[in-house]
Image (tube, rainbow over all chains, first blue to last red; front, side):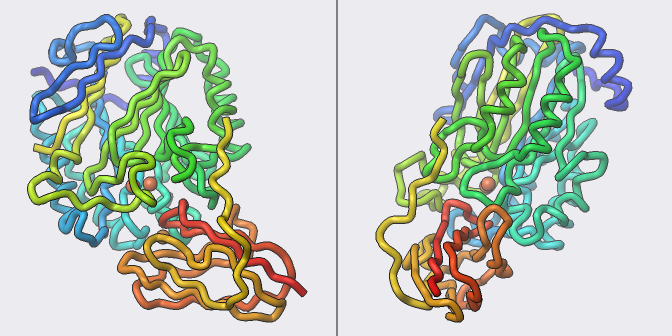
Length: 315
Length: 98
Ligand SMILES: [Cu+2]
Ligand SMILES: [Fe+2]
Ligand SMILES: [Fe+2]
C-alpha cells in the first residue's frame, strides 16, 4: 500500500476546496458481530476494502472515550486497552490521513492523565491527530488543562475546522455548558454559521463532537440542547456526517441530509439507553470486554459518492 | 426537540446532608434555611463533584474521592441546581428559604 505524503492541512485546504467533489451521502456501514465484519449497506458502493488501495481516498480513524485514569471493574487496565487501540491503528495496511479522538481522553482531567494521553497518542503513525474534549476532560476547570494540551490553533473554547481531500471538517465542543445535556452556546453557533457560509453546498461536511448532536436519550444527557440550531446551518449541504463518542457504544441514525454515527470506546461499555437505572460502567463477563471496545475506520473516495465507515473490535 | 432531562422527583426534603451514592444525590432535592451549611459526602467508590449548573452558581467542589466531603453555607434564598461534572446526568437541587 502506498503511504500518502504528509502535507500541511493549509496546503490541502486550498487545493482541495477547488475541487468541490460530489458526495451524495451514501454510506456503507460495517459493524462487527461474532468476530466477523458484517456489512450493512445503506447506499450504493463498494466495500471499504476496495477503497483502501486508492491513492485519492481520504482515510481517517476515529477513537473515543479512552478514559485514561479510570479505575473500576469494568476495565482494570484502560491504559493497556488504549495502547492496543493505538497498536491496531499502526498495524493497518495504510497510514491514516489523521486520527481523531472524540473526547473523554482522560477520566478526571488531571495533569498526569493529560500528559499520559498526549504521550500515548504521539505514538500514532498518522499525518495528524485531532481531538475534541469530553465532559471528563473538563471536570474542574472549564477545559483549561485540555486546551493547554490539545487546544493549539483552536478558537473560542477549543473549536476549529479544517479541509482535507475536499471534505470540510468541523470539530465542536459541547461539554462545557455545565448542563445535563450537551451545549454549544451562542459563540460557537455563530462560528459554525460563519465557517460554512462560503462553502459550496456539494462540499461534504463531517462534524466531530463528544456528546451526540441528536436527542439519543436525553434522560441520560445523551443529546445537545442547541444542536438543532447548528444543524440548521448545514441543511443546504447534500451530505453531513456527525461523528461522536460519549455513549460508549455504536449507534447510527439518519435524519434528512444528516447521518449520525456514535463510536464505541476503548475503555469500558455503558448500558444501552434505558436498560439500567443510570449510564454507569458495565462490567462484562470475563473475556467479553474487547467485544465492546474498538476503533472506527472512515474512508472517502474523492469524486465518488461514497463514505465508508467500518467499526472494528479491538483485536 | 424536547431536550429537558427529567425533573427532580418528589418534594424537597428538609436536611443539611446529602449522600452521593450509586451515581445519585440523595435526597435529590433538599430545602434549608438561609445560613445553613449543607454537607455532601461521596459514599461511592467512583469520584464525583458538586457543581452549580450553567456555570452560574456558588457550588464548585473539587473532585470528591470516596469518603470526601464538600460543604457550602448558603447565604441567599433561592433555588440552586447542581450536577456532577464527571457524570452530568447526576443532578440535585437545594431550595434555600429565608
Ligand atoms: Cu459523578
Ligand atoms: Fe466517556
Ligand atoms: Fe462523555
